[in-house]
Length: 372
Image 1: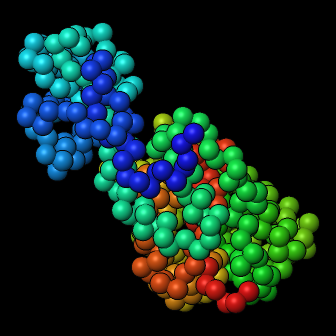
Image 2: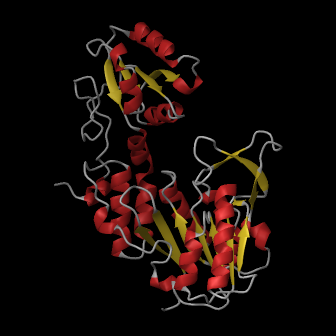
Image 3: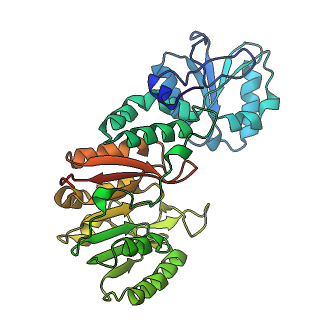
């Protein structure tokens, strides 16, 4: 049985032709003729990235069909197939689902079909950065967890390898971040309905100075506000301890709009083409807090974590707060977030823990070693 640590040998995902009309994504040999023109077809903004990647690898790309820019993608794909039929050319699909959607259009005796998942390209391009993060991690559990999460995300092994690495107490599982501090200022980015807030107060036995809960979506914010009032009563907290803020956190102060492809609870924000259309306020933590000290930042904000960090650079460099940052929303975040934070605060110790049987809920924890 293949081990998760094979992920780091750099040869698990290759562009290989099986001779049966499809590519073997997990092959280790390269049996594609570089001299035969290749045609790329795909969607979800991946075609041009794939084109550039293949050029770097020495392949000849004759034409790119980006379904996102086609009025009728099926008609355009039919035209492409008709033009190259019988020439034994390669047609590379950037994901398997797009190929399956139109597989009946293709005669595999006349056209050689390749399927190269976007994650495979990502693996080949960014393995050095992922390895750099691996080498920065503080303990063996972090390195094994990081490897297992990447194996699962990149579909390296055909089984779920996450279960041995799931740990409880998300955002509060690192001993170095658990000391009670009467002067603690906790910032919750993506507070949702206050689940993290309630866990924090319980873990700190109600001993905390300030909690700021940033939540931009109205339904969740209303629930957060109700929960905040209940917790104040139950823990006899002063009114200014819990501070719900109806805003998102990002690079700078602006207004955005909700991506309606999801629900209002747990949705993501997108930039508004017209500022007047944006009804969601976004703030920079540096601007919001100014000279006020911050001791802990937690962030689960649907892919806006990099913007939040860049909008809090002064706080992070000045205060060196404990951090609990989700890194699973985008593939690039598995290396971008740790490397950015290490650049901002070289003294940070970094630990990764995973809190779910799925690819979600991978958290990067950063702290300053005070000998605890």
